[in-house]
Image (cartoon, rainbow, N blue to C red; front, side):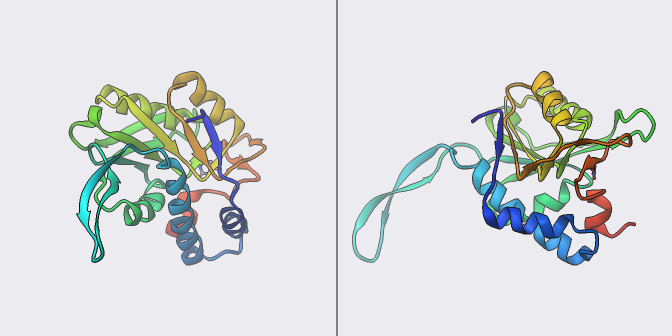
Length: 209
Ligand code: URA
């Protein structure tokens, strides 16, 4: 995969616009995030390895395509990653699931870890780390570093929105990790928010503000 894939599908772009609007209610925001997560997951899993399986249809036997290899691992970067997780799990119900808990220090904007739990045999799985907002890239890069320390070698990063600064940070720290996103916005503001962005994704999906 390329280092950066921006999925410009009209359905994704339309849904994202509704999510960006400040008047969009929490329930609608959450539902749209779920829908977009599935469309992005469709893209990020496009080249999964395949095998064939001998089956019998009601009409004839055939060698039919099926997913090969170990079940993939979805890793949610807490807390906002959970908004992407549910939708992707609907699409890939047998995926294993992990969580990385990082919060962003409001002053330094540096990531601080408070939770880490991931599936076993990470080194044998495709790992898809999910976090809606790739802003400074500090927490995403730190989460990926933790996943590599836990054995992951084949990692992809799925987000809803990315800032150029976050993409550059990830490329510098983890050039081997492809990023799939719905849009690349203009910049970060002085508080580390993506501009124009959509605000705090966690607050908007959980209604905490
Ligand atoms: N996290 C968010 O939720 N929003 C931003 O704009 C940046 C980081």
